Length: 391
Image (cartoon, rainbow, N blue to C red; front, top):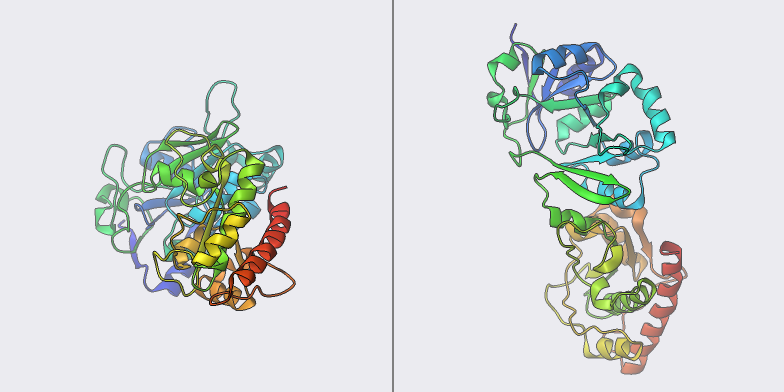
């Protein structure tokens, strides 16, 4: 019997129908941003049906698919180390699958959540190394909603038989699969048309096991802890703040301000947290900034008197991508904070006014004495903030 064909764009009815099917132990082909895959409820006997269809071994290393990064952290990864949390927060939803070794507490949670399916998720690594399991958070609107509505642990595996090219649209799901699943959700062509990047995170660091959409060098950049300072034009306050912070962090980590300030690019194969940047990156931006403007001469001089170098600074706007990349955002005023959240609402939890006691006024157009006062104020509050986030 041919599978029921459902349109991803009739979202409400499709989500309700498909989530009910998954809870009932049906097999459903779902779109993701990479390829189409067959979804299965890991608490149902449908696992055996899918293993037979795909000719999988007893332990197929199911990849658990979750509806959001926060959901994964709460339910599956409560003890994930900071580097992993940064990857989850910056890459999910998105084309990165994360393979991790569970803590004792996480193993207990997995046992309670998966029951006898637990034995089918383990990935054996090197000899004498603890087994890992893999999670992914697909970036496709209807699939996210279906996973959330289903409320059960779901695995998704490529929709076509082994050895065949992966399906990147509903028409590409071969007939042999269509005849053996219960529904196919048509979401149109996938965004990337290639597999997700598979990353292992363990005590040895970060390692790309399977290249995919996200380049390895970009992944290493994403493991940096990014501190972002935001003002209006990104030519006075925020570049001074970034320069001062980079100087303090470099001294603490035993590196140079140039390694901390700007755009880190770890070489392929380096471990997460290694230099350059030693895992910390300082940036600045402006909510009304043009791109490529130098810091004002007064700001350069005031920062220099404190030991910070703004000579290489070029302004940039506080775009969604810049804000999303940051782990913590410090704004100069309450108005800046509101503008950051209006640009990226999900940034609300990580955005703070730099000085909790009040706004730091813009010195633009003022004399050198005013700039020195602002720089001194920045130095005081940044020292306080860095103690909070870099103990």
